[in-house]
Structures are given as C-alpha cells and as structure tokens.
Image 1 (cartoon, rainbow, N blue to C red):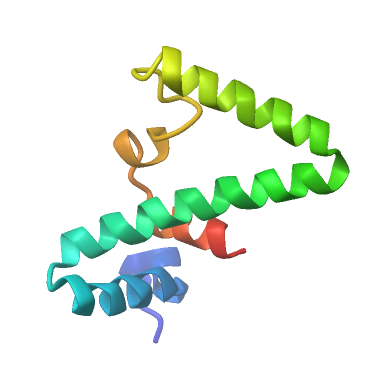
Image 2: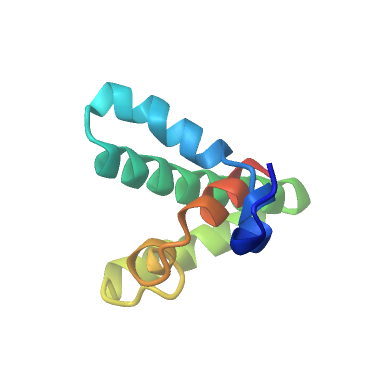
Length: 101
C-alpha cells in the first residue's frame, strides 16, 4: 500500500524489523533486540570486508586487522572506524540491510 505522506518509506522493505522482532521474542525486549541485531550487522559487515580482503591477499587482510586492533587498543575513544554506526548515527535498517547485501 502506498501512503503519499510517507514518501519513500511506503515501499521500504521491513526485513530488518522482522529480524529484530524475531530476536525480540528471545530477549523479550524490543530495544535489546534492535541493539543485538545492529551489533551483529556491524560484525557481519566487517567480517565480510575482511573475507573479501583475504581473498585478494592474506597479507593485506592481516595488515588491516592489525591496524584495526591496534587502533582499538591504543585509542578506544576513537570510533570513526568502528562503533560510530551505532553510537552516533543509529540508522538501524540501513545498517542491517547493508550487512545482508
């Protein structure tokens, strides 16, 4: 159904919300479910990028993971590489959709 006042959101695929609803049945809390699914999407996205890089070069993937780990270890407040997707711009459905793509 198309609702003119919703614009593009009328044709928006709600798969991310269905996944969170299913996870919400497990946790019995919809907010916890959204966070679990969002964090899982971030993890899946970075794991996919690592696997893609590893297919090109294992050395490159090792280097990227090392830099990523060292950045997290020595500068935990720096979130531009990891975490900003959830901490600053909580675009839940976009995040989950990107991870599933």
